[in-house]
Image (cartoon, rainbow, N blue to C red):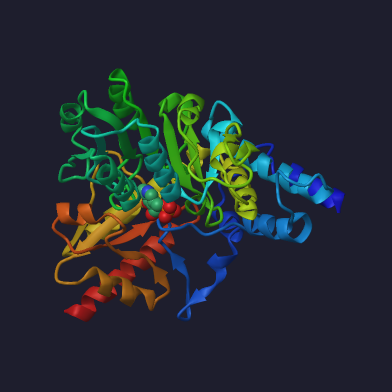
Length: 424
Ligand SMILES: Cc1ncc(COP(=O)(O)O)c(C=O)c1O
């Protein structure tokens, strides 16, 4: 058994890039072989969650089959093996986003928990108080709106919102006007899940830092589509979810610069995050343990490490090229459909196409094409303020991952034309 564990851990590190062969890639994802409603599954809801490669599925099964034990606690063999696998995963994430140290990588449940952790602890650290301002944008996911609203209510702080233009680009000039001496934080999405907009985060961070304001980047839709280097970006915090980058659900990452994390109090109290507990006083452990109270999602963390291996097995520029081709092809084909309008035409876009069709509710589009095995998202995508901005109840959204094909885009187009013919 010892050998079994060691073999798996070692084989997770890729030695050279794989060829970008779409048939082989699709073979890695067992779910893509299944049918839905008697038709071959066409999965185009990747911004909600991505499918999992066999290696990730195997890694979580392997943990429960051969390594299951609590981490950081027992001095027995299995506990050491489990701890090693979990900490290896942290190291992999650290390398993937180029953090300075592994202790800057905090395991959380997902992007939502990471932002809640920051809102809660920044407030308790007194970083944001009465009359202070937090800047977000009009295109944030609810996960980057509601925690700040709750925090502002508690602390009598104010939320300021950078507007977007009709194309779905942030109006940078408005951001420059909003930021002032009262601004204590900027929190902004890297890539919009509803519009696909790739935001000029580096420029936004630079402006904030010139005024001494820290910046949180919500990278939930970025880490799986482009190379992210947190040191190069110079962001203070960067958050994302494992399940959108081919990893398991229930695991995500809060990255923070050491100094920033050290200045924050713990989020939750409990086992694993303490140095010494007496009834009079508790002292806390160093990073990252200070923020990781209780037994974590060990299998999820290990699975996320293998998802990182999977992404790193490709040259990222090949993923970008393939997804750009899907986006451009889908945009071109969809725009040829009469009455269809794409919502979100930013200068720089990631592989998300939100659209509406005259006279047909997005829910009807989604429901009808689902009968052909095509999975897209319909609704407000947890971005209700964007729907209000465009005066829409909802949109239909196709979002692509590295395993999607041009043929699947063709099936989407055929499906949409069928919907339109049914409503004529
Ligand atoms: C941009 C963005 N931020 C945050 C989230 C929240 O992610 P999670 O629900 O995994 O915490 C999502 C999920 O759709 C997202 O797309």
